[in-house]
Length: 392
Image (cartoon, rainbow, N blue to C red; front, side, top):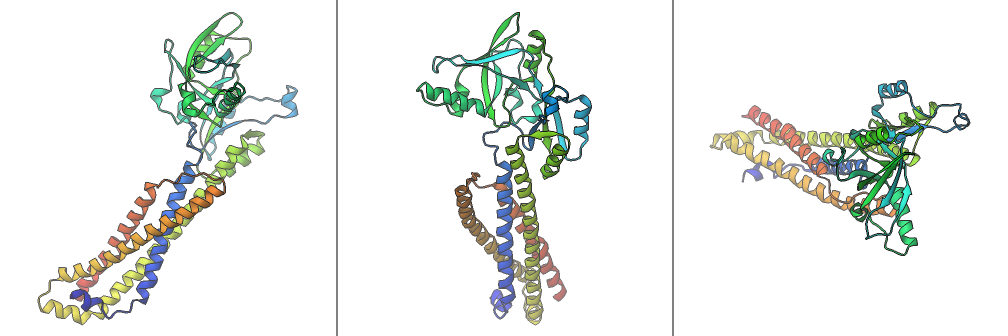
């Protein structure tokens, strides 16, 4: 009855415009947040190197080939890199000065052996649980991170031998062992593959193992810092690339391209989120204005209802319930529209060769629910209450 009295004869054209504005705002907000998260996760599925992390080295030139230019980094150069505003963290990658080979140590696979190059890096650059990444003398195995190219090489070897190729999970279950040596002695250590990375061409080992082997199996060739692990701040890959070019340094091009694309996409989606919030704010203001117009047009009706005994809270509840239902319909319609658009966008990305995860992101639902609650509480309920008090 109250709903008919208050809303039956109102012009809804303004409300329809606000409805579709809020629908577009909510839908774009969910889409932008969802794909911002998915783009940020792109490439992490099989990676064990931390996010925004690149490996840099000095570019090879004629001078370095002739032994005139330096290819290693000094302590001063590392400190300078750490002070740059677009860099989060820097750490040297420690190289082995001892001889090392990796071989299979299982009857389940054919014998395979290869001389390898191993490196160690600070744990904070690795996306790996600390309890799994460590070593001390006497441990039963050394955890390692393999370059993905090594697995390709292993599968090429398996194919040539006429045996099934090895998946990531299967490779982690195969027993391997290191032979570390110098001209005077050698030693064996069982190893266990912890993960893979496409960023490095060497095998990563814990720093403690590298220190032990370098100390106990020294050679005439000293270990030099020729590569650095660098974590770049979000959205700063373009500036970082220019710095590398200007200072005769380089990084893996594929990693740099992915980093720049992720930075651009993150900025773009952040802008879309900002625009979506502005659209939602404008839509909410139009709905609030519509609510105030309803109260103004029903000034006499509200006074009559109060005089015949209707409690102010009863009238207020009808008005707030109307707008709550309106925003809820908008929210549900937005989620359904988001689901439909997401389905087609995911298909287009897959056809274009971009394999983003198609799973839902909880962040997209959290942000739209927060926006819904904020708009309802701050721009509808509060204004409706104040307006009702004014006319009482």
